[in-house]
Amino acid sequence: MIKTEGIVLGEMKFKDSSKIITLYTKKLGKIPVLAQGVYRPKSQLLAATQSFSLSEFCLKKGKNFYYIIQADLIDSFYSIRENIERLAYGFYLLELVEKATPDEEENQKLFLLLEKGLLSLANMDKDFVRFIAAYELKFISFIGYRPYLDNCVVCNSDIGNDNIKFSIVLGGVLCSNCLSSDFSSKPINHEIIDCLNILMYTALDELYKVNILKEVLNRLHKLLVEYILFNIEVQEFKSLNLIKDL
Image 1: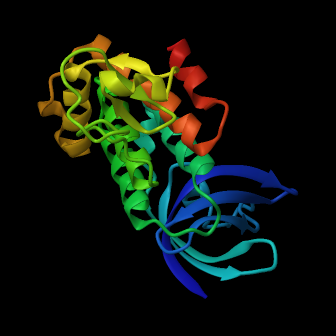
Image 2: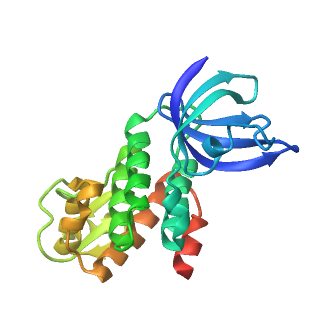
Image 3: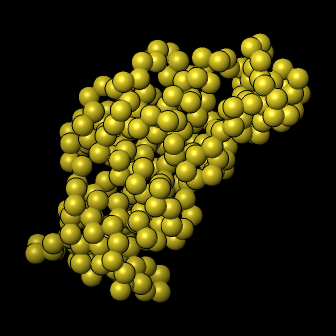
């Protein structure tokens, strides 16, 4: 018997009255959970097993799944579902964790980031790109691929002021002398690097204090998506298609 907080990343109907959920837990990481009888009229599990919901679970491990013994809802983040932009970005937060994390690998920092991200998103009406760029940067850092921004990632010297690029392959900035290390690197400048550092070290609930031009944020978001996809070896995030449509 295991007691842990968990956030529902996704759900799939199983037979007539049950469903399988992908649960990201504080103690166990990502696990498959069978919610038996959840669609029966007297079931108490429906609210706790919907996507986005944060609950405290009492689980029992079986051969192929964990099984829910008890679940107490902490927060459904219901307001995320009330706004199409919040919903689209919310699904992106869930997809990031679902695709980037292996099964049963604990990462409490990542769990707390997801919890805080959903809480911030639930109370947001604007500045979504600023939020998502900051979240992406923290996310990729928490799974072990924090970009190297202080000096050249190859020679560790000062990057200078001219002809600076970011290497997705090498995971950091390149000085003008090391550009041949990665011919696919992306042109950036000190403004971009400064913005990355600001977003890295600003708490999600303090982002309203940060003033970055929208075109710069869009550029950062595009760069970070490419960087994340490369490092987790995934072709695309389906939830981003909905965001692009918006």
